[in-house]
Image (cartoon, rainbow, N blue to C red; front, side, top):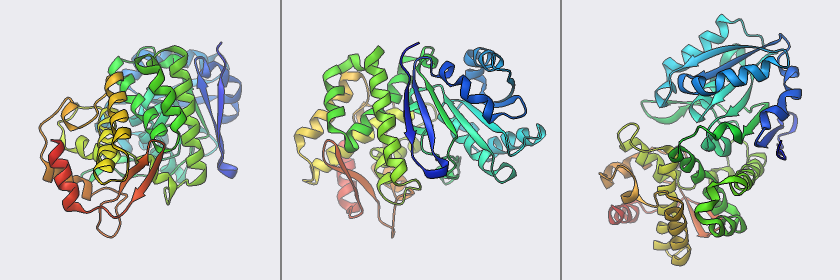
Length: 366
C-alpha cells in the first residue's frame, strides 16, 4: 500500500481527517466500526457508481463486520432536487436510522452534496462519511461541509453546512473515471494554487500535461486538499476568506446555468471561469497580463478550457450570463461580487465591480 497522507480539518469538536492516496479505504477500515454501532452501514450512491464500486466497497466493509444497506439514486444533477432529497430522507427513515449512526456518501459531488444535506436534516442531524469517487469531489466538495440541492432559483440554493466525520479520498477509486472527468476535477487543484499557493502552481506548471499521472497527481491532490482544509478551518461558514474558494465560480456557474444540460462539466466551467477571472483582473489593471497568460497556457496544456470560446458549448449571450452572475450567492447590496487576483497565488474578494465594465469585458470574450 502506498503512503496515505492524513490531512486534518481543524474545527474544534467537529474536526475530522481526510485520508488521501491509493488504498485510503483499506487504511480507514480500522476506524470505521466506531461510526456504525448497529453493525450496518447505510450507503447512498448513484446507479452508475453502484455498478462500479458498490460491490468492492461492500466487500471491504463486510471484512470488518459491517453489513451494507444501499440507497440508490439516479445519476446526474437531477438527483440534487427536492424530490431527490425526499427520496434519500425517506429511505433513511424507512431504515429507522438512529442518531448514533453514520451514513456513507459513495460517489461524486452530487451524491456527497445530497447525502450530506439529507443527513443534516434527518432526525435533526445524523453524521456522515464521504467516500468520493471522482477527482472533483476528492479535492472540492467532499471537504468543507457544504451540502445542498439545486432549486429553480439556482445551483445549491438550498442546503446546510454539515461537516463529515471522515473523508476517504482513495485514488484507486478513480481508475474507472473517464479522462474528461479527471480533467474536470483537476480544475479545482489549479484553483487552489491560483488562490494562495504560487509554489504549487509553479510545480503544476513544471509537470505540464504529466501532472495528471501517478505520483504527480497524488501530490497535487494532497496539496489542494490541505489548502482547502486550512481555509475551511479559518472560515467554516464562508463569512470571509472561504469565499476565495469561489475563484472562477461566478463565471463558471453562469456558464453551467446557460448551457444545455450535460453539455459541459462543472470543472470545465470552473476552468473557463479561472481563465476569465485572471483575464478580467488583467483587464482591470489588477494583475499582470503575463500571469493571466500563464494561467490560460497551463489550462490549455492539460486540456482544459480557458475561456468561453474553448468550452464544448460556445453559443453565449452576454446579457444572460451577467443576469446569472447577479444571482450569485456571494453578492451584496445588489452588486456582483467577484473573486479576482493581484497575481498567481494572491486572490481577493472584489465587491466594487462595475457591471457595465464587466458586461463589456464578457462581450469581448465571446
